[in-house]
Image 1: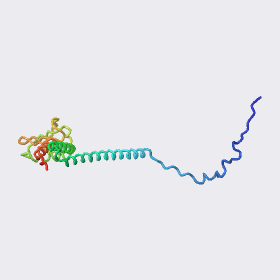
Image 2: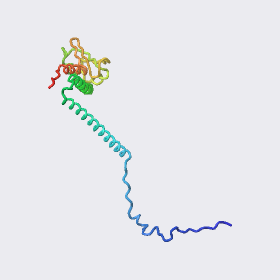
Image 3: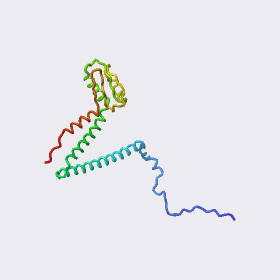
Image 4: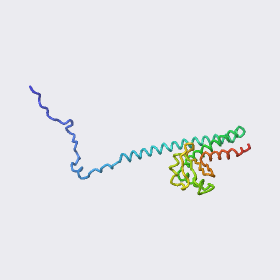
Length: 198
């Protein structure tokens, strides 16, 4: 014999799942579409926020480290007798030269600053009409080539550091550059006497 057909019977015959539902209600009030969120803009904003937070954390850590170092120096200065003045002067000299080297390195090869320094050096030539060779680092030649007087001819010289130059005419030689500045600063610092202990 074949299997008997079974008829559908609800699991909970007394339960009415559509009770209170109006099938026309959905059509009368369309749902608000979700606003469009640009994934690229959202990722950019999230990346910016993350970078900003990381930068702040790094700045806070650096500030805390500097505050701790300042506290150590202050403590050492307050003790006075155990303070090695010569050693401190050496560290101070080294710190000043390091900071100035970084500042000069950034400003020394700025095209407008370099061109202005060359113009001032050209004015120092004994005869302003005299032709002169301008030796400077090959990477600096392109920075100043359009700003030179007609009687000054640039020549790339790999022996010179970026930002340094030598102007040579028949009667005058003018040198300038970050290394000379640092040397002059070092001599000036070395001439300053260490203050006596109080």
